[in-house]
Amino acid sequence: MASSEAAWERELRDWLLGRLSRHRSTGGIALQGDELRHPPIARWWLFEGKQFPYLGGALAANWERVIGQARALLDTYNATWREESRPNGEIDWGQTLTRQITSPGRTFITRASQAGLTAEERAALLGWGTWLAGEWRLHAGTFSPDTVGGADALPRLQELTQSVNLQRCAHVARRSRWPFLRLVVAESLRVYLEPQELDQLPLPQDRATLFELVCLKRIACALADDPPAMTGVQWLTPDASNRIRVGSVTGQYQKTFGKNEVLERGYPADLAEAIRLFGLSVHERADLTFSLPEPCNGFTCILVEAKSGDEPPSAAVEQLRVYRETIRPSVAGRMLIWGITEKRNTVATIEQAISKQLRNGNGDVWAFSTADEVELVLKACGLSRAELAWTDGSTALTSSYQARRSVLGSVP
Image (cartoon, rainbow, N blue to C red; front, side, top):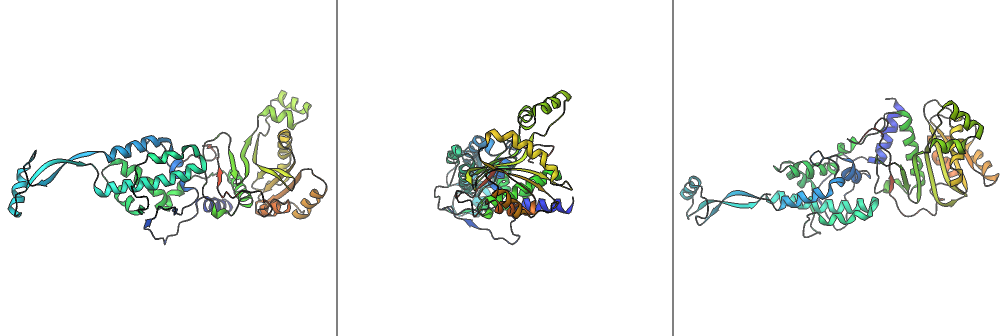
């Protein structure tokens, strides 16, 4: 992998996943509102991304089964031998005689029933359920509020103020003879306790797609509130719409148009007819679009085409023109039409070029820059974080990317 691609991958992982320090301390995590600090991606990975072979899928997709098995495990009883002062039921006479020789009183070893979980396993399961319920409320509250109530069915500790030592829960669960504890409870806790677990999140190997995601990341950081404060990120979720939200800004990654829509709106009628007659292909996917909730400095929409490698800005012009004409009927107001390249191939000064276009009226503004100049372009257009006074207090960035196995890879 080229050095630039490796740097982009590190940038995306650092932003999406953060990094847990090697020198970290663990202990009781109070449940009175204190959150376990973790990368923004962790909750989505825990509930929707990570696959559990024991469940046949993700936690969220098997929520009722998880609840049912956890409750059934708490109600399981197994035969066991215990000491009693009376000969009740089946007696193990060999152990009884041995014990009576060494014990002063009369003792009988009898078969009886007890809960299938040891005291430590029971505490681990209840602690895990209490922690998982809290995580589910936070995850569902961000991405699917109608499912928040699903947390109430999980078995939990009676005293919610009681601290839960997740390290201890994981230790007990990993060594349990019960498959649910080993393969679900312990595996889910690995997301938070083992930093390498999150490195399974796939990133594209294709250079062009990786560059598009880097551009998305940098624009999102420039538009959103302080990125380190983000509380949740969705990643590689199969979703035909590919919608994203950054604060109050909404948009799409790889916005796809129909061929007929592109031909009817993006090309002159005679050229469109020729394209049909000769069976030619046309570009149908815009890399990035952002819609602003209300006009800011006259802008209502941002349209981006990203070109990696040695492609010059001129390579983006025709696609941007066609996409602009295609979406014109659905966009009112000024648009920022933006070609982003990997290398600087223009002689114009960005601030001067954008300023001159702004002074010419209320028409669209065209900009061409490198990915390193993202914030510079937005600031010149009056769209930097400081100017977005209408941005709400949400610090969560949610994004859905269609999981194309051939391009983006699939979640392990």
